[in-house]
Length: 371
Image (cartoon, rainbow, N blue to C red; front, top):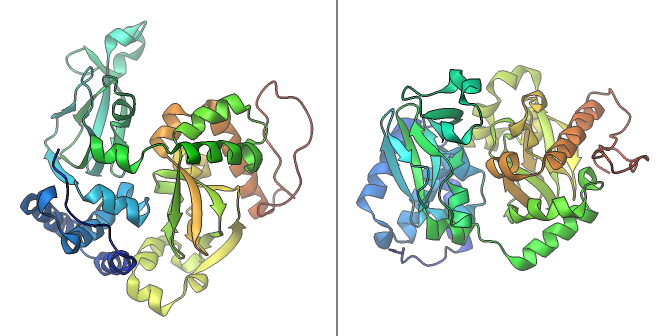
């Protein structure tokens, strides 16, 4: 496997990436992708130096939500071997039964997830989803910003589904070695995450420990700089605050239709501070969750989140959360989010707590969303 020979980037080089990202925001996405594709084609991993890695990281960050949702350091590591590939509509990207060698993130277009009809007890029940050959069932369509292929990389087992280009599409391709290095499980972090979920996350206080440990398997600890911005409704990660504070806010009424352009414009950020363009709803402290709205349509309100200080979070990707986390955990987080929304909108005095069936009766702890 070829490796990039770049050294770790210094803090000043990481700040340069942020400056370049701000300079690229507002530019034509098609132009940026073409520049990125040309750069990646011209510079295989072993020829990328620090200056070129800074450019690649900046361009990839504004090209795909998957990249922008991760801390700068992780983006840099992924970009050391990153490739950008194009697929025509109908092209086979991954085949079920093969051992995975790559992780994919969708930059443009969409892909279909196909399962063999043989895995269904009664294929007649899903006739509307059958492909033309009648041998596969399209069970899901993944769109830009989402990724796929991680389970085969993590488990070493054959892929369980085939992936076919639903439209013409462009994908970031990350090799197995890089993916496992960037998202590797740290045993010390794992024990810490399990303990934190058990004792500090209010939404999960009645979830049995036996269910929290598998949840923690898919989590990592990440850090963000002050003023990092998330758009939870169309994000690709769910975050639990470890330390620091984040603000959930709604765009002011006259800016609601143009909030993304305002936030992403570097010049606007310099002229108008965030607090003047958004109405603060509440503060997220240690143990509180954000980003869950990307998984549930009824939780989407057009809100934004920004780091009010240096922020450390437990993070899990949307794919892992939806596909591999126990339903009782997902329901607990969704329930807490519903009550938090009610609190903000004045419908409830304080959030209550969801209990998994069979965990017993009793009242939850008191306190508002910031408590």
